[in-house]
Length: 79
Image 1: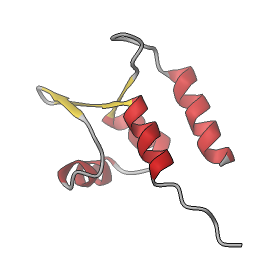
Image 2: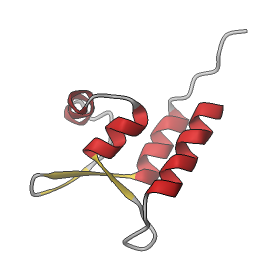
Image 3: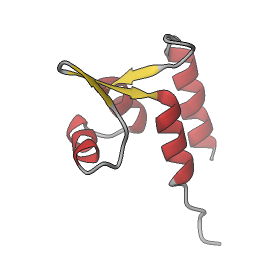
Image 4: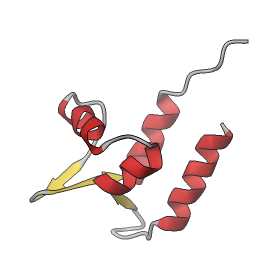
């Protein structure tokens, strides 16, 4: 939980709001934040696991969508 909180704090600090306060991340930025390869993100897009926008050749991810995806897929640790 601390890791997720730190990640969200970092996203908030390093992105600037545009388009009615929405923040968007590039493929490279999201890959760095989630510690995934760009190829893994491509696979997530191809299989419909992650929402994205494509404008020309540019891929963008809405920060709110990524945050929601992380929260929805969180699993409690076994005790």
